[in-house]
Image (cartoon, rainbow, N blue to C red; front, side, top):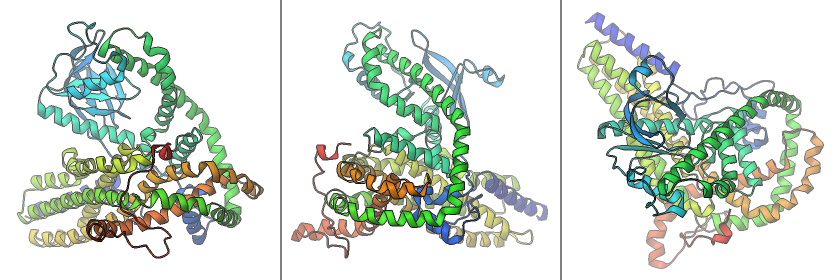
Length: 610
């Protein structure tokens, strides 16, 4: 009927605007991010130079653009009854648990306490936690936590910690915080809580990685440089969380050996109860360090604003001179370190890079293929319902369900599962290079899948809103949606192809760059002081000798990564056929100066120490 059809199109329009206003973001690579207008007086040529040739002013030149923090991927609020192991001595007690939309978990003594707005019994941000649903795994973790008491449970009381079997457990473990032990009443409730908690953990962990704000990128670089100065060159998961949480994790890792040596012997109890007491002590220390880090960052904010304003004043009038100087110094530096750098790349990186690149590509390709399938099924389902002339209530439900696909935990879990399947092999390939950040990599891939899904859903609804009118009958509207479907899938293919390349480049750098820097540390860095005079003569903090040095190495490594991505499929196929039959190696890439070899034994432990 006419009124029902108008209601249908009004509904589509409203959902579209809600998605675009509340969740939609520019699709990767299309340059449509809000707030991305370059700030004058830099012209187009200068901005292009800054993006590709002047990382000291900020990765991709974003320091000279208005900063904007990406909207956090939402977590659906989840709540329900659980039991929790708490108290002194610990015992299982009923509670009412609530996972907020920002990834904070709260628990109350009763549901009425939550509904009346009372303060919770406890709460925690889920940053850095790992979820276990096996009681055996968790008990093993407690045993390993205090190895001196391993197997010594004779001194514990009969009702000792976690001796009673738990049917549907949810154990939240953190390296520096008190463990949270919950239990659900049914397997279905456990599954729902598992999905919700995993979503909250990822939400809280990747807040800095998702941000496009220059301050976030600068902060992560500063943490990396600080850790390199401390002798830690391998990437790991220490940068998960907010700025204060990252600083706290770095400090806790530095102090943990001393804290363990000083306090662990004096803890009361035995066996797992002693391990439990150790986590409570760590939690108190972590809370104090986090409070101090938060206060320090707040106090530093005015000074940071002044420094940024001063830096901008020096960059704007002298940007051309800075670019020329940087190019000159980088050219000299590239010549000086060419020999050791090529030797390191040829001996250690080139033999492994094709397999690492191919494994990264396989992981992200499988992930995005599932996203594409789910997206196509959702559009087909919506078009099919429209052909059936459904009631406005039913269509409203279908449109809403389609718009919520990127935030449907159960649905997206089918995508996220693909990254877990690649974790083991990729971790084995990357670990010899000191890369231990597999959780960060998995989270990044899952964020990418959710982002591309959200962009495609928003694009579909927006195009549908533009092409559907009240003059169309349901069959005509469905035909137009079919054309929209084709356009959306075509754009998804383009966006996902670009996203895959960026993912491989980004994580290839994370795997190999710290290792290469570590290998060149003894010899090449001692040559840097001779460039200080030229850099200091400019009188701008935007240029540093160390920054140019890393950019030179980064540029050479990116060339290798791009080449490795192109050759990985060819070389792997060649290895499995011709190499086995004739003993031949992969052909040399013209101009590469390096031969891609079959996967051989990893470098020695001494060589790869980071």
